[in-house]
Amino acid sequence: QVQLVESGGGLEQAGGALRLSCAASGGTFNRLYMGWFRQAPGKDREFVAAIRWSDGNTYYADSVKGRFTISRDNAKNTVYLQMNRLKPEDTATYYCAAGATGYSEPNAPRSYAYWGQGTQVTVSS
Image 1 (spheres, helix red, strand yellow):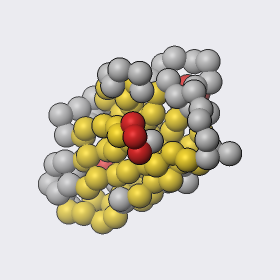
Image 2 (cartoon, rainbow, N blue to C red):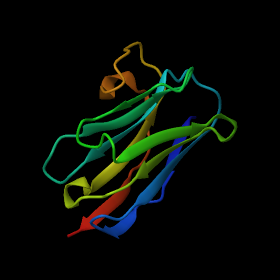
Image 3 (cartoon, one colour):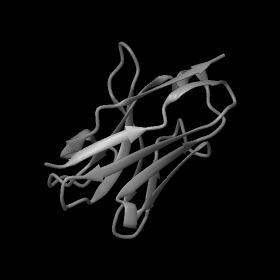
């Protein structure tokens, strides 16, 4: 059973930085992308960033472009999200996602078969 375990969330002031990690375990699986999504209370889950596992190509939501960086460590089966210049509107539960479903849009939840339990990020003003 594939498991994705996120870590690194917390409380940070606006302008600060946090680094999220997502470690995959439980066996091999087809991973076209690994990605991060977030969901704030009362809002839909939204795409944040993704990385194509084969070549490291990255994709970002416009709201985080230039502030967040997604990266991977193949040997550790881990993907990271470095979040700089945090804003209060970045406050949300952040979810890691992986595993191919047959869809190929990196920014669509339907492209991911496995999801982590989420880690809370709170940015104070």
